[in-house]
Length: 406
Image 1 (cartoon, helix red, strand yellow):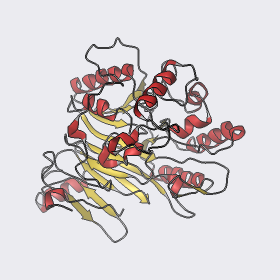
Image 2 (cartoon, rainbow, N blue to C red):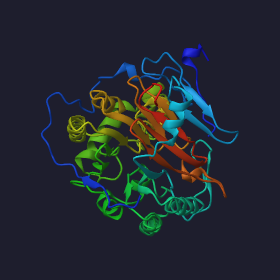
Image 3 (tube, rainbow, N blue to C red):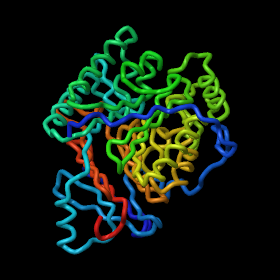
Image 4 (tube, one colour):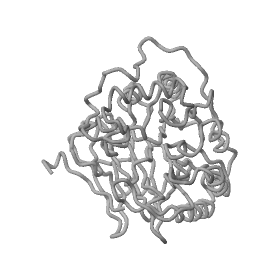
């Protein structure tokens, strides 16, 4: 495990009016905007260890952070490097959150027998909607959740195509039982079932020209930015759409296999160049830059949400956004982004990147056997987000400032 400086920490484990949503507007591309086909690669984003399990560092990537063990069944990762006095710690614990929100990912419901992933992990297609039902009951019982974020993939790709529409409606109906707004992200399995033009209205996703990126501010202190990780993709768009053609050309360049969902022969981070992944397009990158500039001017803290993970430390290479490095180049230009939330990689993961941004990939509801759960809620404070997980979703305390009052 190398030295203590490279220690790996293992994880064991409100209703106001909806916040205002800002749909993207078209803006001219900057000449400095990176393109999908650029060979530019931010080497600082490379993982420091081959293992994909949860690793954490402080901002200078030298001091290992602290894991706080609460009991045998539950572990909360804390990103506080130094602890204050007992009174300071107690005061921080008594502090009430600014707001809280529910969270879940990868329900992937289908009315079909249980199966397995391509690497043999069991998948419980019919049980997943029961996990969602219990999640909604839990969120409503909490009574102070401001909204819910679903990080994508509400139905599975194996859902029979003649059942796709009804399956999506069935899952959306369960989400709609939450007593507040629900913000959906699209994932690859959503797009296997329905085209964007049909899917986005069902999920009430605001967007321009069938794009699925937007932002909203639940309080003046915070802004949530939802990225469309399948903006450039071989799935979801019409076959002759420029986004589809761009994606297919990109895959031909990056993946020599005839089966573009196969990583055979690809090494390291190149294994992300698979058809079930996608990219953030040039226009969306420009939009993101503008949103982060505005958030910085307003002194807002930003939470990024994307179905596809944006950091190698929190995901297997096969699950990463194609151009995660370009997206992180934009994000790292500013100091306002504190957290990146993702789904897609069902095992979940957690890391802190070289700029101190927390990356949390959530455990999938789909992989919960009968009686097990994977959902949670997040308490939001001035200086941290605290994910309170249920069962298979690991609780995680993500502090922005590595100091005594965190």
